[in-house]
Length: 171
Image (tube, rainbow, N blue to C red; front, side, top):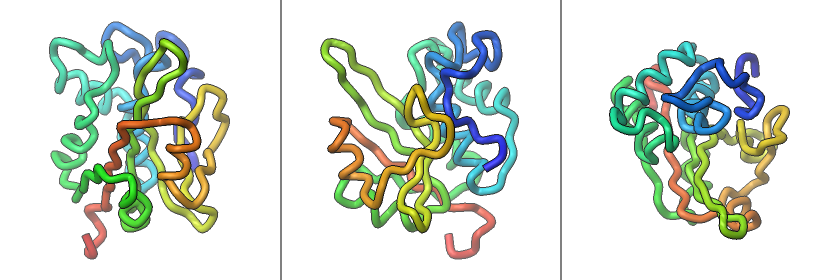
């Protein structure tokens, strides 16, 4: 898909700053939002998405990343029907119903831990995510189960945001 961001680490340090840090370091939240909009056929400048998130967290300004509920608040404010899904056993069925989704999860490697947002959608090949890994060069195939994808990588604390296109009457 044209103009999707597949790998935030490839964003030049001074392009699309997120607060006082680079988007390559802490930009996964706004990038997932941008990519989800693109998956539904909307265009929004990255700068506008970044400004929205920076206003939501005035003391942090994106320096520690994005609040896990910020994408839901943004999409709701923009008029999109959204649903937060907390049970991983429901992720697959709910994600298939959405026009785009954002998956938030936590990870740990040794003493280092963090969190990440990815935009995803269900296709005839299974679930496909965008901006998943530091070495991603295109869409990343997750397989037919988000729960299995998360378990196989040891990701935890996951939340799924299901987004429905506001132009779609079935919403």
